[in-house]
Length: 196
Figure 1 (cartoon, rainbow, N blue to C red):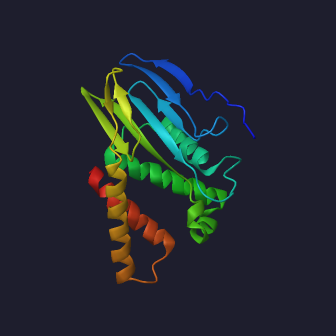
Figure 2 (cartoon, rainbow, N blue to C red; figure 1 turned 30 degrees about the vertical axis):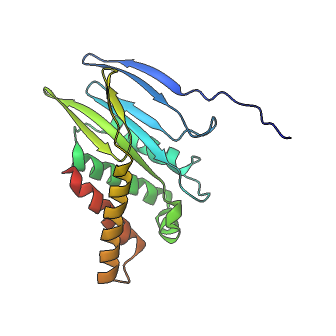
C-alpha cells in the first residue's frame, strides 16, 4: 500500500490598512506549490484576481498561464491612474493583457492552440466618492466587513457558458470561416454586455 505524506496546505495571507478600509487578503492555489492567484490593493481599490490554468506547456515569461495573467492584471491596476469600473474596467484589463501577449510573441501560438490561452477572472471593489462599486467577473467571491459574503452561485457558470455557446453557434452559422480570435471576442462580448 502506497501512502503519500499529507502536506499542510495553508493560504498565503496579508493584511493591508488604508485610511478608508482595511483588507485581509488570502490566496490559496490548487496545490501547495501552485498558486496562480493575485490581488491589488490601494487607498480606494481592492481586487482579488483568480488566475486560470491554461492547458499546454507554454512559457509565459517564466510563469504559468494563470500566474502570468493574474500578475499582468495586478500590474496594470497598480500602474493605472483611472478609476474604471464595470465593462470599462474589464475592457481595459483585456486590452492590456492582449498587448502583453503580443509583446511575448504568443498570439499566433495561442490562436493555433486555444486551450493554451491564459486568463484570469476577478472581483474589484472601488470606493468612488461615497459609493462602493463592485465589478465581479465570474466566480470570485468577496466579503464586506468580515460578515456579508458575496459569492455567485455556481449557476452563474452555467448561465455564462450557455450565453457564450449560443453566441458562438450563431456567429459560426453566420460566418463558418470565422477565426478563433474573432470567436473568442464574440464569446467575451456575450458575457461582458451584462456588466454595463
